[in-house]
Length: 98
Image 1 (spheres, rainbow, N blue to C red):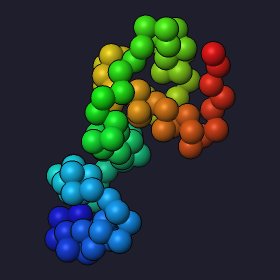
Image 2: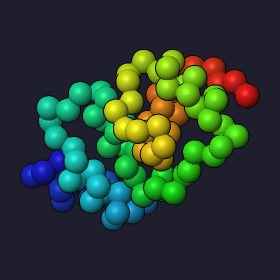
Image 3: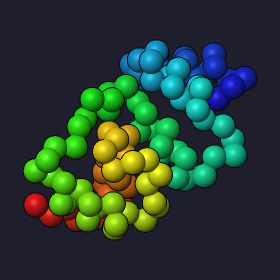
Image 4: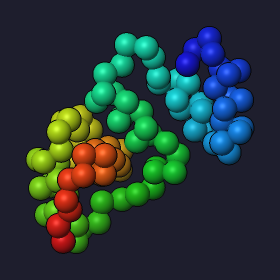
C-alpha cells in the first residue's frame, strides 16, 4: 500500500476500518506477497489480538492445523496462528468438528 496510503485510508474511512487496521496493513503489505503471507497479515488485525487457544479446543486445533491448505508459520499457541487457520478453513469450506 505504500505510495497509495491516501487512497487506502479514504477507503478505510468509507468502510469504517480503524486506523490501527490500516497501520498494520500499511506496514506489512507489499506487492510481492504470497497467499501464506496475506493470511498472516490479516491475522495481525487488532480485533484478533486477544483470541486465546483454550485448553478444551486443543485437540481440534491440532487437527485443524494439519488440514489447512497453506501451512501456518506461527507457533501453535499464538492467536495469529488460530486466526490464520480459521480464516483458511472458512474460505476453503473446511468442516470443523467438535
